[in-house]
Length: 605
Image: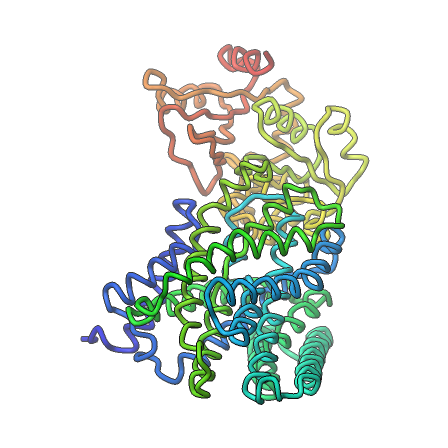
């Protein structure tokens, strides 16, 4: 029997609570960061199941720092320079103009609003320029907004995280080295030199690893472990040189590796994404469970003034000024000006400096911890629950993707795409052959020329618009490859394929479209024979059993079901979706079925 105070039980509990909160967020559409924060508070100060400071002791701080390092590295891995074609100028302005403006305004808000001493206010104002991937990335994952806005928020969060920490390092060094008597130039030189060295360490580690991977010096099964170990080692090495410079090292390392091709880049990125989900969940639960009643009682009414200034004055003015001379539309600037949740980096760095400044006897340092927790909680709830409604109000929310992406241009996919378009859904046909796409173009259908597996498709193709992907080329191996490669991005239940000929062994990679697994050649022959696409609505009077009997008699294929909620699910050899009254079924039926002809005329009308 394990006691409830067993460290093993508590570690497992942190994992269950964190991942459970993320799953509930996925099912309900609520912001994951807010639900994780609530879950941690319930498990910590409310129920007393978790006491991170007591449970982990001296290990808590290094655990959090290493987790943040891996999270920042994974964030850097998602920063492709080609994204800057959409938001390059904006990102530059957010970093080089937004940071100093935000620091100045944040310092003023902490000094006049929260009543902190000027030096402490400057330190806290520096930390507040961060937003952080631990909160921004999960938030963006739940939004379907324009790529430019996503790129701006993502780049700002990941790049500004180490910058805010370094600002705090510089102010801390200024305070502890004698305040006004300190040599400010020397301190700034030390910080800049340490930052440059940290960048060189990160860049050097990235170049070394990518070269080793390409040359085959590391076997496939060791690539992910070697990468993780190198990230941690580089972070610790830079952090030993100067506190918090390790954040720069791992960020630069991630960005360099993201823009240098390696044979296993997709595999490594997926591994880091999975690990990051676990780390974000665990860190957020530990962070919120650390909040105790002592911190709450230290919260003062004047801090509310600072929160109001931070949310409604500092952030909006910073973004509006930084993007003043860019071509970014005003509604996009307004959205970026509102979205700035703070997370684990802000809380962890603040707590670290608060402890050290308190040991030095600096007045006002004791206010940093409750104030930082207040900022984290207020911004996560304010931005987490309002991001989606605000995006809809501004017209930036493109809604839930309900389209269908057809890979392979042939007469059957063109006819199916015309049917899908007639149902009021987005549809796109992708193919590597311009000649094959001519028929689709003549039919007035949207097309994409290129290999869907090419990384550059991310720049021109928004996968969030499509609820289902169907690979329907005449190449079995390519169809299977499309499904296996894109399933982690789109979802295994949202990718399916057609087979070239009916033979055993074709169904192992990706769901095979239709219950019978009809080959594409046979579907093409059927189309030439006059088969048509139709739809049938299931009602209380005309049940699914009646529909099955009709389809059995006609010999037609059932392709998909549109649920009353608007969700689309396909029928496959491996999976038959559940059908309820109010659902509409898409079919492919022969011409000698009178009811099918009636449905086809109904669709055409």
